[in-house]
Length: 186
Ligand SMILES: Nc1ncnc2c1ncn2[C@@H]1O[C@H](COP(=O)(O)OP(=O)(O)OP(=O)(O)O)[C@@H](O)[C@H]1O
Image (cartoon, rainbow, N blue to C red; front, side):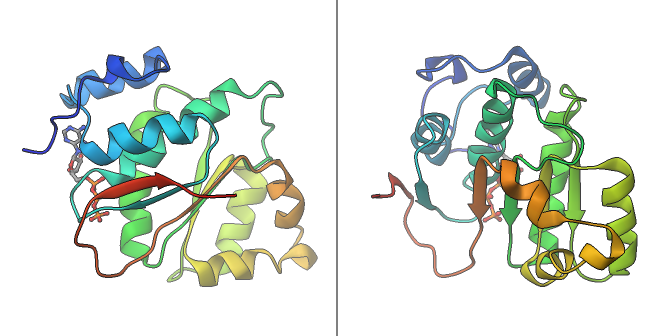
């Protein structure tokens, strides 16, 4: 990538967890992209962040890294069925891409589990998987997510699980011409 000009990872105001730094080294990502250097510090201070950046600018890591950092730093460790982060994306493809990146980084954090909730498969399989394995990070498309919130009769109380939510990330599609990342008011 030619837009990784925004400083090394250790120039961030808060030092990243060693597990994250190791994965970044393994990937050969020495520098942050502009959207990463703008968003990660804000996210890690628990600010509401709105980012708009062109495709391929590195948005995924701009929220995947802070999500893991925020969950690690929680005082009460998340239990199996407690969801600490929810990522909602408009398409299955995006959800799959994000899940792949999240999976790479979670290898160093086996205490956290992610689940992908997207259309195209039997929702009951998702319900059973969630009940069996639990999940702390949900990556979902809106339709399947809504469906999962209505599965109390099948033994899944997702509303209860998301009471522990620390981070909500919404990916949106739309015209994206300029890079920008700012703190949301309020
Ligand atoms: N700091 C970095 N250094 C080098 N490569 C990076 C860095 N961050 C991300 N990448 C790589 O750049 C590519 C684009 O990143 P990513 O998919 O996150 O972009 P995006 O802005 O989310 O794009 P999209 O809008 O398509 O989702 C990926 O192959 C990713 O692995």
